Image 1 (cartoon, rainbow, N blue to C red):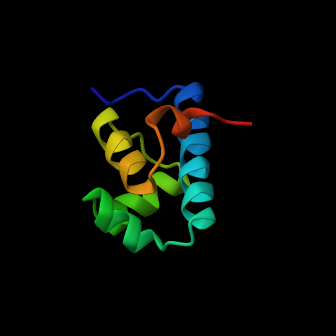
Image 2: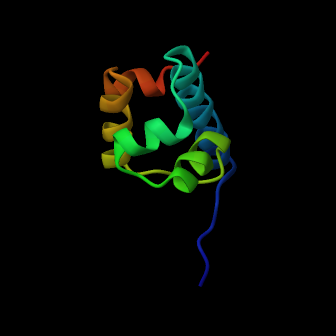
Image 3: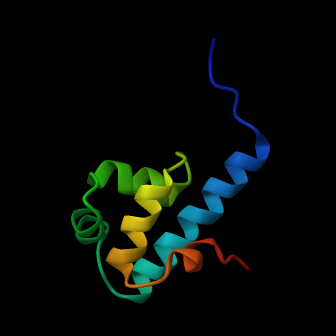
Length: 78
C-alpha cells in the first residue's frame, strides 16, 4: 500500500522549501553550507528547497538553528 499524498502536503512542502531558500540566500550561504550546518545531505537539502519532500520536525529544528532563526520563523509564509 503506497503513501497517499494530499494536495495540502504538496503546497505546504513547496512553501516551506521556498522559505528555507529565501532565508538561506538572505544570509548568503550555499545549500551545501546549510546542509553541513544542519547535518543533512546536500541532496536532501535540495529536495527540501524544491518542495519535493516532507521533512521532519527535528530536521526543521536543525535548519532553524543553522539559519539562526526560531523554528516558527520557518513556517511564516506570505
